[in-house]
Image (cartoon, rainbow, N blue to C red):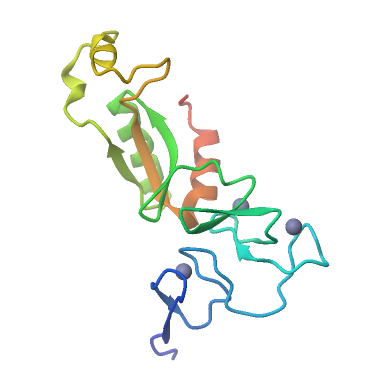
Length: 165
Ligand SMILES: [Zn+2]
Ligand SMILES: [Zn+2]
Ligand SMILES: [Zn+2]
């Protein structure tokens, strides 16, 4: 019965958003008036966290690269509308996590900053040192990213999987 939803353009990020949305799922800006912070009833929310979809005031939320996030979720690495939920140097593990997400209907994406480094034998860290970027953590991390709206589900799947990051 329902015809295709009307789209409006978010004035904050210029993305097309379904008209019946109360907030922009891409940047968290609120389209309706008088939304209060979930922590502070008396304060107007200044955005909706794009990960947990709760409204927060400017004290409880923060803008990270023009995306509104609550304090709890501001730690996520976000890249082109996707958030990093898992990172590991072992490609097989990363692929395993990705396939588990896909089985659950998520839309994961694998992002590696330095593709091509994986032919190095495991345990060989010379590459990291030689690159001058090694400072105690693995810089050649393979990131498993999911769309922002799928982060919470991805986190709960990760809890069930026997993987460590
Ligand atoms: Zn927006
Ligand atoms: Zn949040
Ligand atoms: Zn607040």
